Length: 455
Ligand code: SF4
Image (cartoon, rainbow, N blue to C red; front, side, top):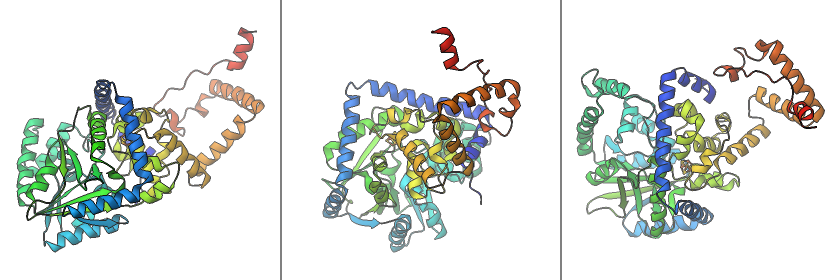
């Protein structure tokens, strides 16, 4: 099946003008909340710097901190597993479930399990996976993937949710009252929580010093699942390690403010050891992270704490929607992570950016996101993976712009063509003008204007 490129999928998204405007406004509202919350802390910039440095230190000493975490977690009675890739991760999770002979489990939001396509893998084995985060449950009912890492159903309106719940939960047709729908989801999920013996959660931070891990949610669904189950499986990417418990004070203050503009996430739950009679497992997953760590220009991307501030501020994400990125992690950071998995399949993503740098400005761990997108573009171009038209166009532009004479000549020809034969530029073949009006071409170049006005 042909996978739509970012541009093709965006075209579908923006065909619905009303939804595009609403999506854009909603995410901008979240970004504005982030601005207000961050300005309440005079030490905000110092916190960002400290977070970035802690992650820098962690990345430079990753093997040591992973081993320290493993030893401390094991001493706490937690079973630690290592997975080199997504397949191994899925196999490990399945083997634990199989040992307990269960056919259903509850799962709280975990982008890692999305990355590993765990749901599809387990469903194939006959396991019923219930996503318990409200937004995730909505997209799961619709057989979609999350369009945003913090707000998985942000592409949907309450009317869409009402219809989905009508089909899957039997709520009255046409009821789109958020309070009513949330209550319906609560009753439905409560039943699933009470019946599940196995619960899977993600991990936001894992503390090497203590062997504990922290899961942040606003709905408390991770806690509910973990507390009611006999077996708790926590799945984490190896970059989630932080050295010390005191570092949490830095990250927890940054995470909620950057993500939703809240002062703190509603539940920041610490899991250190299984309660009596419970089994607790942690699966540490590499899945390409070591490879990214070895790429000098991109290792920084492993500092990401998945707050999605870069999504909310990105003018391209806000107007193209998360599904256009065809990856579990969309937005600017997703466009850096995806080519690490598969350059060819994700060659379009680093180009889905204006390189305005707004992402780097809001990133709480100071990742140079827009620069890395630019580095990927160069890398993909050098490897000849970009579409032939783009490569040719770039070569022509480089040749033209490196010679003042040719540049001047081309500018003159361009202005004349745009004036006399505008249809050669502004036509259905030129995607640039699909949503834009052609500017009136200037009568002279800036140099000509300068010569005649500033002699
Ligand atoms: S790259 Fe930065 S802004 Fe984007 S999700 Fe990660 S931590 Fe947040």
